[in-house]
Length: 460
Image (tube, rainbow, N blue to C red; front, side, top):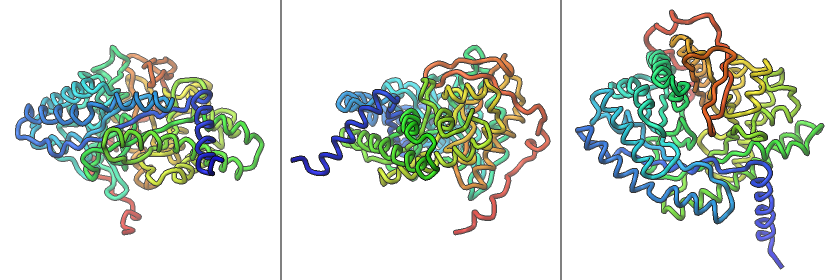
């Protein structure tokens, strides 16, 4: 007779197969974090050689291993990715101009392609309290670097609860986003889809475009990001008309099952690659596929159209129960973990925008209770840099005061205006161009210095 553990495992296998077959369950990414702190050099060419050699050696079997695990267990693993130490830190001694950092970005792109991964994150600067010379050089290199590479992703952390918001960096990033859009205008300003500006960025996030390998992380680590909005939506079919306790319990139990799948993949990847396992990031990351939408979950909970009154409360409940279920399933939940609300990557969000139910101001309110922030939002190409900086500052303020991660990934699509549509393809999806408030904030943004940290940052 089978023992209890065997019965539980057989039940889990059956449930997992059903979630994969019918509800778009996947492991969104296996991300290998690689430290580049030992790659320092006095000259950029030597630095590039060091990082190329280390990345290609450490990650040479990453894609092969991911595909092997997918075949063995029948679990779709959509992406294999790499994150590296923020390049402004790792390359500070070797890079003495923005062109040096562009050269590094091209090397990262070449290394990523040699390994066969989908994306490489970490062309990043961490400058929430102030920017070093290297930080500023890297930020100014971002537009050219992202226009000359295909799979490199960039992020900049401009604020934190402990330090406040570096408004000089906020102003500069508004300008860099506009320049990145202009440099790739023939491709619908696609470079901006690979660039995110953070407050309270986590060191172990496996999701792009914001992944980087924090300086407190080990030399090499495996982090796994799982998804599954379709699974949650399907489970909620059984909770129609039930009370909030039942609704919460249904979400939590479903998140538990999804996380168990991620834990299995993470353990196997760690074992096969002989690399320590880091964290599971349980984030409901939608795709453009019909039925794989966070907006659909909110509407299944009883919201007529995402953006209607009650949306923020429903999202708060969803986000919290996802985290509770994940923590039940794994002692190593980290990264962002919760619910993502990108526009272009979520067909339900797109539908809500097109119906007039959802605008940027409502999305900003929703970011108070979700995993990240204003994500994959296409805006008119003539939006001023100062307005984009104002949007970044608003999101950073929400993160700073509420002690959570917030982020901005907006795409000013050159040549397009409110009501037009842009199609990025693949996981990046398509999106309507959303209206931006026409009143400006230039006088506010051009002030120099830092917005001080809130008083609760001194609780220690």
